[in-house]
Length: 212
Image (cartoon, rainbow, N blue to C red):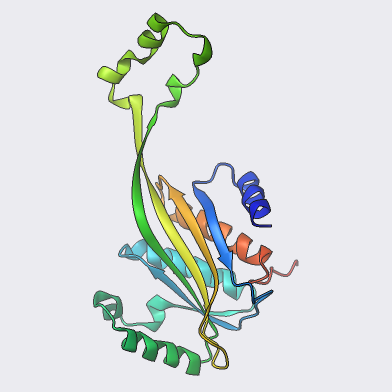
């Protein structure tokens, strides 16, 4: 099922810079129905966080699920200082008593620098090439800075937690998603959320929109 999801989404978003690398679903959970969710985007880039939380909030609300952004719930100083486990436990208890039953938590785990050959140097069939041709085609390595293309891959992780008062606060789903060479915050946020919503729907963790 997982490999099918990877393949299907790749076919649907072949031009996207977002890639689902791996995911895990709690084997004890077949499906999930939530009524109120907290959306948390952990990043120091406030514009990216705002766009991410706002768009995801709209996705939940379009499915008649109450969604609250962490930017609206917490004071700006909340993320400015490190929190202890006890402080976070208190926050969790407050959420439970405020009728939240889930948290969707997204964060950037790391950044990887990549260097690849320019596409213009991949068009020759190297199985039948002579030394002089090989050297001739690739000698720009010495002086052309555009021979290589440098870009970043952002390794992101999204987790869905249940915080229902009558249940253990447990992990329901986790997905590892790569963001390849992002240029536009808006485009990246849109692609990321489209992928996330698609997968959660397929895993029966988010209900699909009603067809009007």
